[in-house]
Length: 315
Length: 315
Image (cartoon, rainbow over all chains, first blue to last red; front, side, top):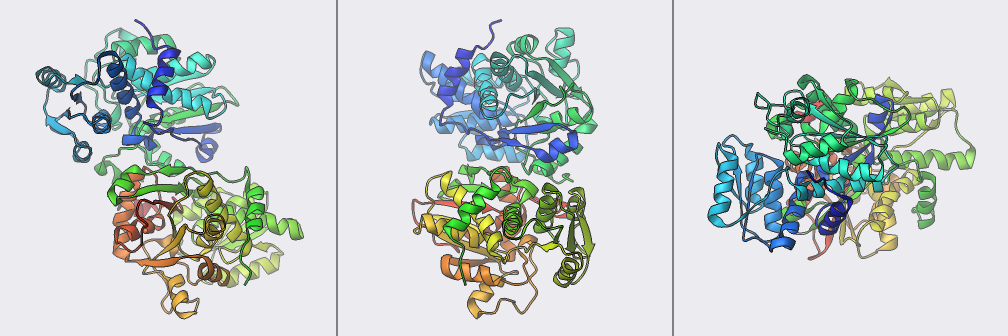
């Protein structure tokens, strides 16, 4: 399988220029002191739509427009951040947009999709409904993660974190379907092969680890995690290939370690992040990640869209 | 009374270089859309110690060291952000530090003072105890707000927000004792006299408004506010003089408007801020601030040290 190249990433950077936020890379001395190492965070919670997903969705649409012209409308399927990102992209380019969401989707996320002008369609079979809507209407289905253009868009996170600080010894990235880590690994390994790129999954939602161990993309039990943003039902083919080729390791953190790390991460950084963004801190605390001494760690904070019911549990 | 000058602020910038965070000025499109104007936030919640107070305390110590040498130790009195800032400054310069705090101080803030190596002393009479400790030990009392060096330190917020974005039509600043707005007004009015500088107080803690109306710095009723960071018992002499000379207006927001604005501010910006930082949004929503059409507003988010008990009320 063809991996995303430096040229793909450079093309994505050009497409995204002025359309996404160059999120700050922030030193996190309080975190670093607690962990005994230098830590910075890449604050993708401050991205448009509250997560990195705006990057991949924007790049995928613009790349498709270059190849085949702008589509007449957009279709997506997602319970969460990708739904919001596609609604945002649809509004940006004036395209009618429909987002297939599960009937149990968090009301705040449905409301945000609506606020951005997209139409939510509730269905238990997200993928089939999205495909049939796209076929019926002749609209373009924007994939959530398993797509080279999406991966190249997410890779711009990696380019920025290298450009905006000293070369890190290790970059830690939350893993759901694997689009973010695939892109970041492509960007980081091209420029700094010695930097370790480590993926972190909740042990309740470990499709990528399962795929790496067994070669089967779909785990036997449907993933469920307090880090809801990471509960991808399967690892992608493209993302699995990128992780195999470019990622140093993927570790699994116990579910019970995630919410305590989440509260502490918010207090230490003063950033509102979602539980998914806290799995890297949980992994560091649990001693799951090998740390080069004296090195600097960058934690990619993937998003900040917290369910209000979850917020009430913040300590 | 002599006001802080551009030279004072430039000297403060040099002292603070590398010692405080140049906090990001972040566009806030979600806020701006809701308000119908362009909005950016100056994220002082991301400052060392979680509030702007680190600036003034650092500048005041270093200015005093230039005049009279480094003191043998530091004394401060504060229930909140200034306590943490002085503990931080004491640790930075290796000075023993004692902080007088009220017996009812929030445990998390007391714990942070201790974590930074300072000694909390609990007393109902903060000022008298601090003065007598400073006299007994020969240590230096770092004032919380009513001091030209503290004001010049806070002024660096104003220099940065002008340097890092387009000239704003209006800058909104939460007002407690008035140190932050005094400094920001000095910096902003020097460079951009047409930019309106507006202070915002809770109507439950309105020492500055009371002083502007009556000339008396101490209000008849002891201030109490859900924006606890703003409950200064009196307006300073220096700060009142700065506000009179340089600030366009100080508005008072109803207490009931603060916490709803606080929740929405956190969700819209993905920044953990304290209720004090939300009074400006509350004032804009309540229509209390005259807005030049087409202009850009900068909201100074003063800090992010939220009491855990308050966090549980976040919606």
